[in-house]
Image (cartoon, rainbow, N blue to C red; front, side):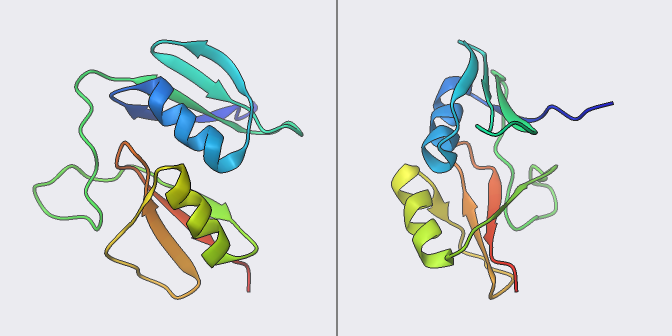
Length: 120
């Protein structure tokens, strides 16, 4: 078996794929109205995006009775501040709650939390 992609749902697959394309710089593979793929240039596991008309953004941090986060992306970076500026320029929002000093949690345009982190 080979894991080919993680799939993120949203109300608009193309919009969310565009955000991650700006953030990561990966080229598009499939590009349909409700299904878009991004693949890392050197190969490996990619990201796919699926439109879901009834999509509800998760709540971060988790709260009882609210839509739960099912997964999140961890993106290793060399410089948290520079990567954070790039994420915001691409359309992310810095999450209010930050659990660790060497990790920054952002929300993508569909509300999915993702973490930028540095190896120590």
